[in-house]
Length: 360
Length: 87
Image (cartoon, rainbow over all chains, first blue to last red; front, top):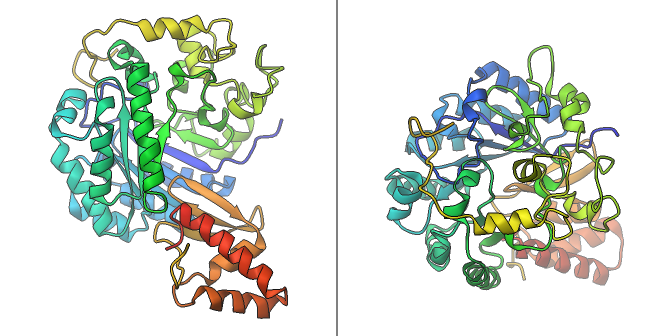
């Protein structure tokens, strides 16, 4: 099949980060891809993305503020007509940089919080950074940038949801993303300790639904579905290499954050000789799970195959060792019990991302 | 419903998409493709016109029945207002 139009570029410009989040979605093997493309390479990627039809760019990482050329990259994306999103921890907070980013056309800032209180960032990111995060969120609003407050939800902070809603309201956020943890990267390693309870999820969802209704038109409240507790899998990335194209720090082109964990696929790197557009159109790894020709049963004959696309390939690989199987999060998967086992996983000590000698 | 002088929210941007030959409304992490009549309405939401003036402008430009245009404008503004895209 011919490649669909990607609307969104996820530019993971660096894997460097001052935080150590226990649920970080970067693969635990991130250091294999941590060498970083130069500014000119990223500028070329942005041009090529615009030519492919991309209209949204997310600058993320790692911590994108760790790169001093972020301003130049935002400026280029804006000049190409893209809506520019900065996905940041807010650390290290520097007001002058936020002003420069706003002046170069940044549209939207997403600031992540570990919970509603200062203790959460110490407990789950091993960093005392709550004040910097609050300052970053306030600066975004003062500079008239759209603001999303993002919190990854897990067993350790799920009961804070009412306070998290109040925090987002106090900060004047346009959006609140309550993102139930997805078990990739460090979150997979830490799944025993992060796994929520069904009762906790139901309470949190009720709070989120009520807040969404109450704040309609003022703040958009998103409650990202927890797929270890659902009948159907997530529509991961809206389908493999379909609407989203992602480039990681060393220039490797992937369909999602976790895809380099699938060792059976070989992803290609952009270069002056091999453009983003060529890779998007012709890379065998990106074609591997596009459309539905690859699907096994029960997906192939399922009436939801155009809704959830067989779920998450990385999850099938991580739990079953084969990326081409139905996501075990689907109740129709013959291996659905792998999810039940994951739910029962016993908590162990946290593996903190990026702390010396602890990463793989 | 919308304010008296509807205006595109600061977080939303309208742009023309060459591929689809349609206007696209971009906002955080999302985009909406607009048909021609929706785009014409959004283009008039610049904070200087009342809803009535927007309807009037569209009616005189298109010659379509005023009632139908008024209903279309109200429906679009309500839906964009729910998304926080017009103020």
